[in-house]
Amino acid sequence: MARHASPEPMMTKTRIRNMVLAMTALTVFVVAMIASYSGAFARPTLHHLTVAVAAPGQVVEAIRGQDVLAVNAVGDDAAARQQVREQAADAAFVVAQTGEMKIYVAGGGGKSVATAAESVGRAIATKGGFTAAVEDVAPTSAADPSGTVEFYAVIFISIGASLGATAFGYIMGKVRRPATFLLRTLTLTGYSALLAGVVTVYVDGMLGALAGHTLAVFGALWIYAMAVGGAVTGVAAAFGSTASVLLTLFLVVVGNAAAAGPVGRPLLSPFYSTFTTIVPQGSGVALLRSISYFGGHSAGTPLLTLVIWGAAGCLLAALATALRVNYRAVYERFARRSRPVLRPGHISPSGRHAVAAGADLD
Image (tube, rainbow, N blue to C red):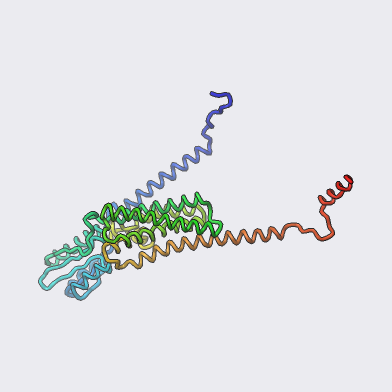
């Protein structure tokens, strides 16, 4: 060992405490993720299913008597089918005069939901003595038969957008001036477009899972990335990095599970289904499915939700910047006022000493 080399510092109590806290926090995070996903996806149970029904009155009332079903009574086969196509209903049951019962499902709205609706419809047909015939009016693509690619695209863009917003904040520092706010906004916009573009090329061009809607898919993913990244940036600017970390954890632990991806909303527990239309993940998945499988029907609500998330983040960041700018201006104004001002004809003590020293030199 060299003469002036010093041994590595011993593990102090502070370092040991920090290591224990870090290990505990990571372990809690992993357990929370497992609990969230297993609670949402492990044992899906049908809790609520909206069905359009065109059938004789007694059949409609019998179907309405099932607790998990909400019935939209319609006049004919075309109206029932249209409700499924427009996402006004999860499925439709039509009983014809011939004794045949048509079961309309929508695989694009979630394969598990379509399977559950088919099972319910077949059970009703068996009980009523009808012959069941199933038709998927919004089937998934051959490259994505399970209909989960849109879910994974949204989830991983969430990770990229939130981590990117955090990294930009660390690199650029706090938003203290309008110029910095503008730069952060432009950076986040460009980065969101990059994420959306790469993911669109992969899921559309390479996988062919969401083929035929390239520009619409890109636009939806861009808006989604802006919503997540903008929300994280705004919360960090207004309330600090700790608040943004808590928001990110909430979106990862609760938002991902509530997105109604592998398990559709009718099969989620009431806890997670409550958040499906609130968290950006649920709106992102719903928007992609609307574009890809339902001709854009019912896209308004998820689109509005994403715009609200992004706009709220932008507003928080703008307010935080304005407050900092105003605080600096007020502080500097008061600082100037508080400086000692000498009245004419008066010399400070240091000035008197300087004059006396000059006189001595003369």
